[in-house]
Image (cartoon, rainbow, N blue to C red):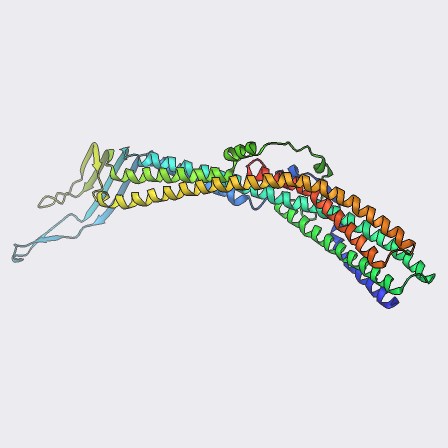
Length: 439
């Protein structure tokens, strides 16, 4: 038994050393708001959203450039070979000398005047895409913040849980010491000591798992928030003392309908689809533009024999063009655009319904967490009272070791549930903030 006890002690020491090695670094008390600010500046998960916004900004600049004139210039030099003439039946071949060196210089300008709304709709469509990109960034920002909140509160929960387990280990070892003293006096069984040693061993293993979980959660927080490697985060204990406002469900629903980035993004998709319809309709309209040009080229080949001189001319006027194929092609494109609008509208309605359901569920859970806290506090009081009673009876040889084990396990479970209940209030409050778009 002594060898087994020694082996158990060594194994526990190794595991505990591995589990808490990460906590030998300098811990820092960091608030949730500080984590949010760090993630805003440094989180790799937000950078794609920011770059998408910049891409949308560039798309607007491209769309606005459609209002600028189209200017084309060309310059060419060529070698022209001699020609020949024949009758229509290709008889009586005669060589036709042509000046061999040719040149062309031309400049043309086309300023769009009327495009059926294509340019304006294109610009407005690009601006709507930028708005949608910003809502997508806002939604991703909220997701990151809520993810950070979950990890942060879990660290708080497991840190408190570690204290509970350490306290229970201390108490269990005191009981174990008393058992060994009673065993030496001949009033306790070796089997009782073994069973309580098993309880202590399980508690020590649970402590190792808790330390490892805290290490993982801390690494997740540090990575997502973009903090320096090696940072050990200690949650601000004042978060439990934070005064949480009490609002009715209707006020939360109203906040969600106004602020939810998910609803804003869904609405922007509807706006984009409708603007895409306008852009499709513009294909049926004619294009009108002001045109001007100047050209100089030579030799003059339209004369026979060719004239070895440059011919220069300029022009100015109005150009009108119409794509006749749009009469039978645009209908199909317009039907597809209208179907996309209907789909986007249905998605918006579904998003509203899902948001309302989520707010309702989170609000119920939020109220429930207060009821759970009251229940868990009462459970801890009863569990401690039961443990003290059983311990007193066991010391007086009026209770069995199984009663002690049951009382210790009940006390540990009640204290763990109380820790969880306190954190759940904060969690569901932030869950409501996330669902309503106010986190």
